[in-house]
Amino acid sequence: MFMGKVFHVIIEKDEDGGFIGRVPALKGCMSQGDTKKELLKNMKEAIELCLEVEGEDNQFVGIQQIEVA
Image (cartoon, rainbow, N blue to C red; front, side):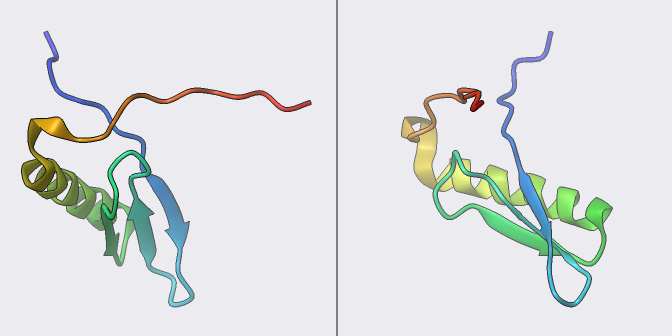
C-alpha cells in the first residue's frame, strides 16, 4: 500500500530550453533540469528537502479544482 504524499509540480520551459518546476503546495520548493527527466529527479529531491525543513507541520492542506465557464 502506498503511504507517501503526492504533490503536483508545475513545469515550464525556460528561455534556454531547460525545464523549471515548482510545487505550489510547498512554499519556495523549486528546481530545474536540462531535460524533463532530470527535472523530475531534481524535483523529488527538492520536495524531500522542503518537507524535511518544514517538518510534519507543513502548510499543505490539499488541492481543489475550480471550474470556470
